[in-house]
Length: 157
Image (cartoon, rainbow, N blue to C red; front, side):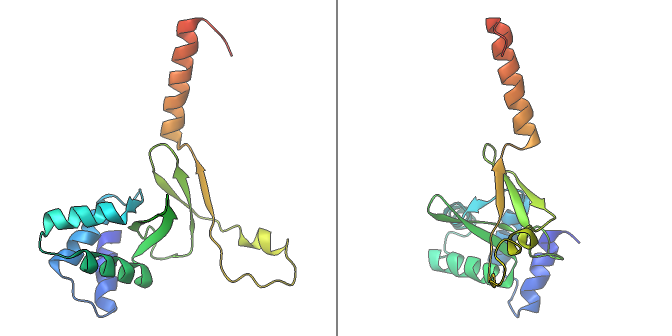
């Protein structure tokens, strides 16, 4: 079962009706599941699909989706960004986020045990761990540009 289908099933299991608007929102996030989307962009998309839907309805659904674990959220540039849950079997996970294209890659390991050893006796109540950098595709592109630039100038680095 794909994540969009799982998300819609989660809605039902939490007692929510799967309306056309909710299905469209989940579908949009599913089509963009490897990138975070600003809630304002999601709001704009939903209002083009359903001109009568209010901002409050969209934001209320996003909040419910976050609380149910259907979407993941984080702050970016003073706004909330969301993406469809990438692993419903393991909701606690972390990400690598490409700073160029925005691609999100799930990290399978949690480093919490490492940090717990550094604060003996403390009780860690929560954590958030993300890695940032260039994904393989963007790094390859950057390397090609760099090599093309040094080849054209005849300068070696």
